[in-house]
Length: 72
Image (tube, rainbow, N blue to C red):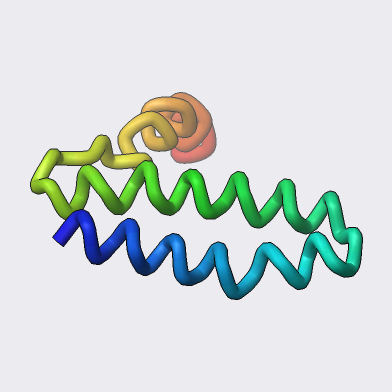
């Protein structure tokens, strides 16, 4: 399954990157690369069954004092 996922990412790269390079859209290429890397970094452990951290936990911890202050 991981091989198929990597193959899918390679297909996406093959379809998108040549057009961005040809049009010299360097900022878009950097943004695309960063988002693709984040997507790969989150999807591969998900396919392997490795539990991923819940992003709402730190957000909750950060905003809890503010919400308690408002609810007084």
